[in-house]
Length: 246
Image (cartoon, rainbow, N blue to C red; front, top):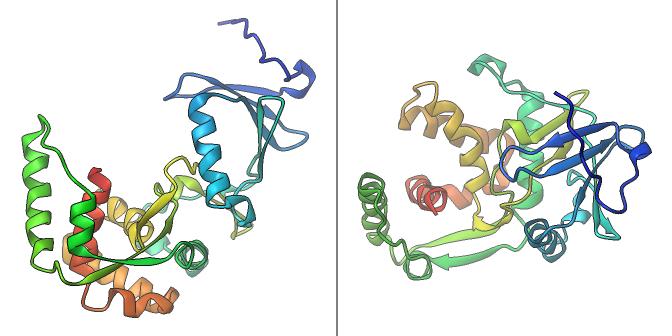
């Protein structure tokens, strides 16, 4: 089906090799293969993300795709590598885990702070919606956390949507992590849990199997975070559940 697409002012036809209509925003992105760049028109939503990029100085992170604006056109580096999603646990090789650890080790020291659980719960109010089942589940996590209200958790900069589809590797080495729209300050283990838990749950691993794997990953690949999670895994899991829901 042929369709005429009006290019935004500032993008020339000779610079466009591929046009993509995005799934969620229904807008267009334009790919320039020669310069390995993705181009798009500056919008209010994209500008909000760009403000976060500047605020958290993401362009200083090597695995963040270089991004800049010129004449209301946003330019971002295009990944040359591929994302890789294992089909089973045996495909979690050391190369993949080292690249994952590199991301966590790079982000977790940034914007690091501590907060008491009582303050965290006061700062994050969860309003009851029509979804009664989810609200009951969230209420259980909140009640559990109230038992540890005097304890503290660590917050840090997180990608916010870290998963296999957003981790791009080139010759088994980390090239880029993409899609930073939900970047922000969350619990320091949010990215680790968000990376592993959905993959494991979809393959029917239970809570204790997932816990064992994540703790072993931290011991083997991010040992500098061992003290952060020692005797606090269940607390961080509950915080993760609240952050996902929010």
